[in-house]
Image 1 (cartoon, helix red, strand yellow):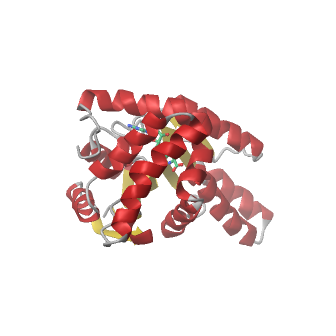
Image 2 (tube, rainbow, N blue to C red):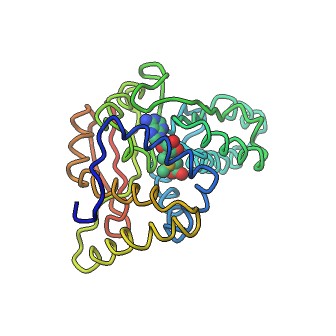
Image 3 (cartoon, protein in one colour):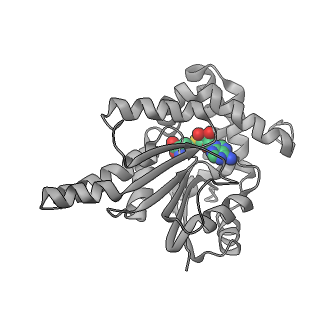
Amino acid sequence: TSFGFKEVREEEKSQMVGNVFSSVASNYDLMNDVMSGGLHRLWKHRLVSKLNPFPGMRHLDVAGGTGDVAFRILESLNSVYRRAVQDVLQDNLQEETQIYVCDINPNMLNVGKKRAQERGLEDLRSLMWVEGDAEALCFEDASMDGYTIAFGIRNVTHIEKVLAEAYRVLKPGGRFLCLELSHVETPGFKQLYNYYSFSVIPALGELVAGDRESYQYLVESIRRFPSQEMFASMIADAGFQKVEYENLVGGVVAIHSGLKF
Ligand code: SAM
């Protein structure tokens, strides 16, 4: 490629992604803040507000890593709980809600469990950590009210399989939401963004995490990811209706959504 990256063969991809996330797991949360200048927090907040979680829901956060999205969903539900007047009602709501964090990498899940402990959430029955592959989910058909995947689908081997699995596990009326680094097309901003991605990010990766290569690979994977329109049509092809997307920061990230009818 023009940036001197080697083509990554498909069979190498999963292994490489595994290595990337094993080597970054402990630095992962810090790196998110450093790379995005803290913006990933706003983006995840936007994702959860679009999801509009409700008490008693069964939700699956795939590629959930260290639990960032799940914690935000719980926070959002807690503000709903606080508004519930009777204690009894609160208990009932909390018991029924189930949030599953599914990730292929146990190191990421372990960091997440530790974070849950620090937040005093380890005994919460609503929060479950599941090791599993987005391409072959270990959940039943039509079992979830919501599905989110944040910064996860870009690195999978077969995007179509992930979308088919999302569709399968959602109940009719269930919502699919995907937050992902996407494509900037605005002239001027695009050049600036490319410079940031291909020069600054690998340098930061080396400086903060001591791992230039992993971050170089992550940047390359953004470039390979389908455009907003193309990804929207893949979501529709998986069977979803009302497929839409919202660009944030000019397309640095996009939130795609779809409904299962
Ligand atoms: N969603 C989290 C967040 O936004 O902070 C984590 C995002 S992290 C960039 C990507 C995650 O995807 C990693 O934790 C990695 O282990 C996971 N992952 C990669 N391939 C996967 C797959 N096939 N199935 C499930 N998780 C996968």
